[in-house]
Length: 487
Image (cartoon, rainbow, N blue to C red):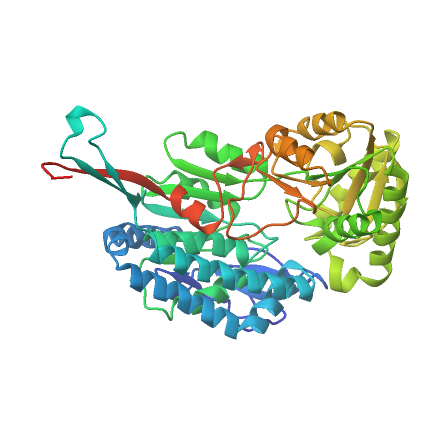
């Protein structure tokens, strides 16, 4: 994929020949293009062809037509294809990392790590595909069941529409594509308009593993043309990762479809007495500000016990200031665009007007925002109630862990929480009482294994990612009862 300068604009006739998209596993071009910018320089670097409505229809027809074929592929064929993608991705690690950095603004170290995670995601899908066995149940536990045995297997709901965001343009794509292919479900992938290049590059690898035509498409459809696609009755599953506002609108519009939502959060950390303040502060600073805070489980709220609060604030501020001096290029990077920078800055200003104070940072230069630490922010401020999606962390004090739990649960979001404690009873209590999808003990909530179930409650979504758990969400159970058997 060639990245080159191009006239600024969206859906206009490009000066350069636009990159093709992938239609039913083959390259295609539409009659319009969108421009992709380098998020570091804000200069155009590529044009991407946009599919016409007729081409989207072709992709749908092909996906619907191949449903049975895809579902009935031997497990070894699907597993070998997924393993082949993983191997090819590992071999082209540098190409993918560079593309991620250019189009998303992610610092190179995090871009490379995203590629590595994506390799693991595809390899895990290959492994899960090989052990996607089903379950046997004997039914003679009750008299009518004498001589009966049940085989419970899972089958795809049908065609999957995967809609992905800008902040992880490869691994969040992998978390849609790999589980779908593993269970034999055709998938139409719709990448974020600001970051389509990585998923189109992934198409080059998918095209080499021999899956039937129609099994997958990569369609950079503009957001304002998505309604007809999500409504189409041939789409059985909509798997959306992105903003809460958009996600819930999709779900409300599709009451009879299987809709999976991985949405936003304002991830919290609880710091109990006895924690290693220096270690805790470094983790908080690193994962509040990494890739400019553009992760739905980046640290946004910190609740520190009064015994350690002042020390934690001081240490987090010092670590954040150091990142602002030395880590803007290799750790933080820019936010996605000027509109995001303006919004984040306005929320910081709002918090200060409401009585909060800037401990460190707060300045913005274009799309670069200095790592920012706020303290004493009212609970009603936007930086406390909404998802900042920027390099901003808010520090709060508590006197009893019950108070901290209440403040965490007061959020409308419930994705993940981190708690630093040496008390196993407090850890289990956190797991029991915190209204979130995951509790990380001894670390920040930004930790995620691509094998584990990942997702939230409340406004953070429904359903789960993590390869095996997404495979379950993309499928339904079907029972076969065998009768007349000697058990």
